[in-house]
Length: 396
Figure 1 (tube, rainbow, N blue to C red):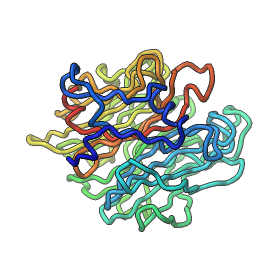
Figure 2: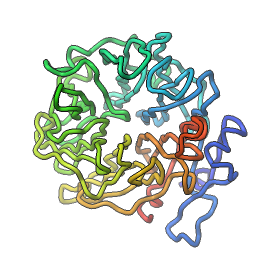
Figure 3: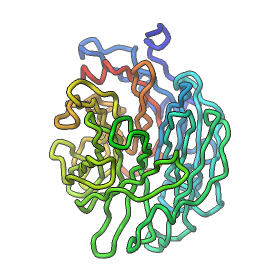
Figure 4: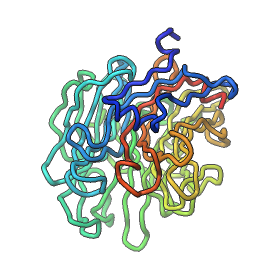
């Protein structure tokens, strides 16, 4: 690892941004294998999105991708007026060409005035093309007024510099009997590496059926994103916002937000067509009202085992105590985890994960000084990027 990347690097868009990312401490809390030796190295922190700057009151729902050439692409929903889930929201992107140290100017990928454009979900294809799925709905005054929410997809063939016009794939992504309100991710999708169905694009999604509540499912493409179809549906309900990874035997793990303080884990063994099992995982706790989480297949090991990295707020009550947890046995057991929050009582919300070519883990996460809702800008201070050497996660 280079001397530059071994140093702690702090990059804010303003002095206020640094305070947001680091809870006003002026230094990052960094972890080494020996807690007694924690010091100012090994962890890179930067601020691609700071609430109140760039024309947006609030930034939420991060999506993270590292392109084939190594560029870091940080996506999110920019909320113009406030942090609410409805209102004037745009799909945004900032790129970093130096591993997350600095960020190019903001790109607005989707803007339809008062109609929300949100939940950007990237997928990096083997060809180098970057797909981006996102959601659109007509503006509503209240969540109870929600009608249909549609799915759009675009792509970039030049590392995220420019994007094709978006097209609507809603008709391919819903089944008869489903309510018109629909969700994807938030987070990223994957391309299967192993058989069965090697090369298949797999996107985590969710839907609702009258009388049953919400359920997570998989959205599949076998032709590089040209066409789509609905795949396996989680049999356990409620399950909602979800993230997907591939296991060492080629199975898929769909990991979902739910109620009751436990994540729902569903396994497909046939490439995402059906679910072999679905139910709460007692090891993976979350706030009782749920919170989005992110899951990454870090690599494949011997004996058909996969190393997984999982990020979420490990607290039964609040969105705080964000931790990266590690499994080296297909999610059968998990480490205690590497803390990525700003300290006790800080806010750690939605997140996304990606792997760098050198093995570092990239984390894009909603961050704030306090989990309490006293002020939106205290809870949702912005979206922070962290580049974490894998050794720190493994040793935690």
